Structures are given as structure tokens and as C-alpha cells.
Image 1 (tube, rainbow, N blue to C red):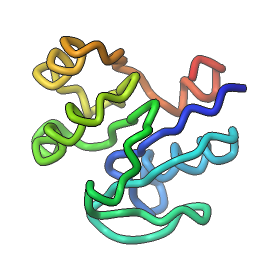
Image 2 (cartoon, one colour):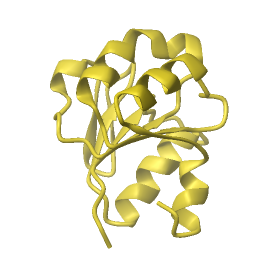
Image 3 (cartoon, one colour):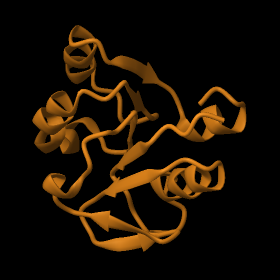
Image 4 (cartoon, one colour):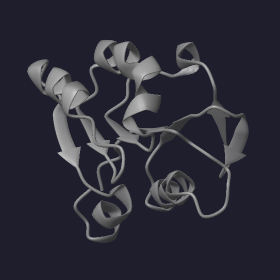
Length: 122
């Protein structure tokens, strides 16, 4: 399996949150993860960071768990990072940002990371 270093944008430690489930499943599948959220915490031994400056830049995939209005503060960060792909999970779709990412060569997918992991499409 190819380890796709993944940034979970909108990371949370709250039970029932899809971002938490995705972070745990990514770790179970052997992927290296970075977590970025509003509140500090820890998921599977990985600290949630609250500042984009703390995130490593060699990210393969970003999986987004923030609504469009809550993505605005991270738009420049994502564009400068130039990840290979960005997954916009249900409820996180953002046509404007998706177009900007695609224009710079980033693969954009509107899908559920959990489903992708479960079906071997990740």
C-alpha cells in the first residue's frame, strides 16, 4: 500500500465527528497524518495543531471536513501547499476553491474519505 501523507482539515476529538473517524481509519490503514483544527487534542498519538505554520509541507492529500465559510481562512494555505489532491467530503464542497486548486494542477475529488478507504479507492 502506498502511504499517502494526509492532512485532516477540520480535525476534532469529538466522538461521532467524521473527521475523527477518518483520522482513526487513516491511521489504521497505515497512512501518516497531520491534523489541523480549531482546538488542540490528540488522535491516535497525533496532536491536532491549530496553526498552519505547524503543518509539514510534504502533504499528498488534504481531506476537508469544514463547511465552505469555515474554509476561507485556510484557502491561501491550501493553494500555497499545492497538495497532489484535495478531497471535499459531503458538506465541504466549495466550487470556487475547487476551481483554483484544479487550475494549479491539484486533483480535486468530491467524495467521502471513509467510503474511499473502505472500498480501496483511497
